[in-house]
View 1 (cartoon, rainbow, N blue to C red):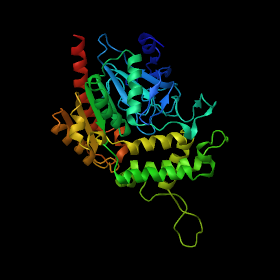
View 2: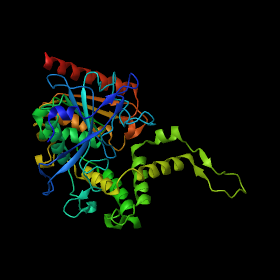
View 3: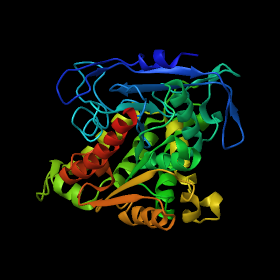
View 4: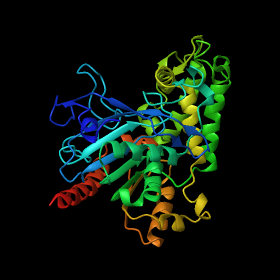
Length: 398
């Protein structure tokens, strides 16, 4: 197994502009210690792909873990090549001078177990059969991700995170960290998340899964063995999901009822296509070329199954009584998938559990996707809190 020093040196960054972490080289590590999963099964070994930004200080007190959402991965900031058109998925918020300031923090971002961007998942080879895992890959829970992330922290020599940060499904992982390893994080930042999904959210996820599994090329989940891919089903699933991540106002401001082609003129037999239709098809087609359908099914089921208070008699106050860290909660006014009410429920439970919590509701027309996008007040609130976290890390050094 690699030493902490070797692991820390594994990800290189080269600055290309002053507010970027630069060119990033992802690394991976294969863990050979068996991992017992919440479902009762065991992975004998597994690989995690990760990136790091910034430098770990002498006291190892400035490390921040980024937990990704459903379709996220390890590439959160910077670029892999100078010619890349887009940076990492959270580049607006990770980098020099940004809320998660890489001049102050050592940031770790990984592709979760079960993912499809290099970490062991359904598209990986099952060592017992020599074929892709496919539908045989074990079902996962948020706690399984947290336990594997804790092993990555051990590899990197990080005994305690300055903060564990996540949006949406990532926020669920951050909360699970606070309960599973209460002494290993000082701050928990939960953005646009919830303690459990609503019935409506579960219904949306099931509809998306049905779109995938009803595609003839799904082949019972063994499409890789058949040299096929259920692109149409995955594209529809992504379109369903993407609609729920946006808001009516956001879609209206961006597209309205503008046409991409066709006309409403009488006597003209040309099919009308709205701009929003073209946009959704593009989103679906792009996603179906880069994401594994079995991973999508696995991730959405993990979302459905998450219930922070289930094992505490359905009492969130009892659950959070185990937390020892401080919390920052952020929600967005137009987010109807993870509405502000869900964050207020978390805040109320933390208050009754006597756990320090700060909460901000950000005005935005961008729906659930707002946590990924630039927003001046969001950046100020997030940045101010993280500056306090950084100051604590400095005091740990001194």
